[in-house]
Figure 1 (cartoon, helix red, strand yellow):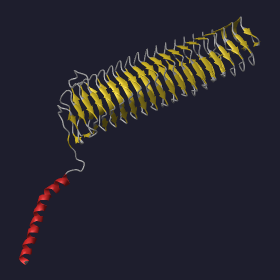
Figure 2 (cartoon, rainbow, N blue to C red):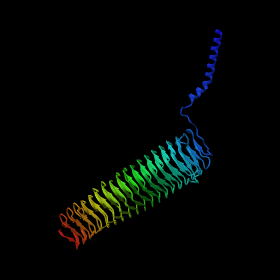
Figure 3 (tube, helix red, strand yellow):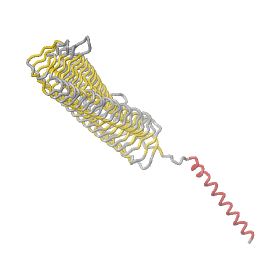
Figure 4 (tube, rainbow, N blue to C red):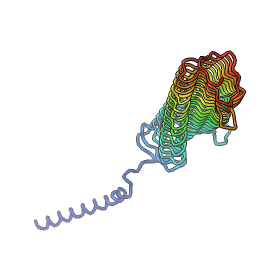
Length: 501
């Protein structure tokens, strides 16, 4: 019996030894394999594929008509391209998470394909890159991008040399440069996309005939919407809030901006610089740190029915000629409602400026501007003309300001059928610092009533002005006062209480 036990123990030892030798390679393999390792991604796809797990490496679409459904699994780098679609037709790429590549989703020379619900995050260059084919002979056309997200890349979406593509409900967040960047790409439609916390939100360069509708750019450190050398584009119902600049249009012609909103930006709401023949209608720019609308070195633009409230300046034109501002509103800005500086031949018609503490309308160093049927109420001054020549003010109304119409060191201007009522100081005042003068202006058919000082005041430096058929009544001091040394011409006016005339 003792011998039997010895044999039994010997067999046990032998079995344990065999098991150890069998398990050692498996244990070594387990130790050498990372816990989060994934299998290589399928590539060269010539048939539709649905992923069942995360994978590593490039997925290359190798045939037309293929659908890649990543099924919310992750395609991980390193590598140049995450998902590559080159020179294909009718491809669908959906539900992919792509990270760790140089370019996340790469689409080159591909037409009539669909890319939806993909997420390109933390790729070193582009999240989504849509471009020409590798020989630069064929562009990417008529593709649809919807519900995609590009986050924490250098560029979010980069569309280059491509035509007729549609981007809908995509998001570009926290990319180092642009959220959406279009270069030499025409006829693209962007609808309901969002760009948040990038450098620029939407950057369009050398591109024509694109349509941007209901997109949102928020908290970008540069511009919400930036157009450079891009013509004939349409922007409608877009929102640019809390960027540095809301909308910036430069070296661009014939663009139309309608019903867009730019609020609480760090500089200007709408900045039009060296841009010509653009139409800006029914837009809103409120609570921007500097200007609601800033037009500089830009001629022949039309601004109609826009609103600029609670900015520093509501509308500011500088060195800009031949623009038309009609039916715009500038209220409660901290400085001026409408400021025309070194700008000639502009027309301001039926605009409203209320409760601006400096002035409702101010023209400086500008010639030949025409202001008709504008209204200024409860501003510091209603209308100011400073060092300007040959402007025409007709049928404007200045009520309850400090000065109604203030003509300072200006020549050859014509004021016709304007009304100044209940201003706390003078209704109309012409003056200049000696030895200069305000001269050769014409005041015809204007009315000054119930102002806190004079209806019409001409200081000692004013001369050669024609004052014809004006009416003044109920003013606290004089209906019309001419200081000693002034030499103006008064014809058929209706003044009750005068001095020096």
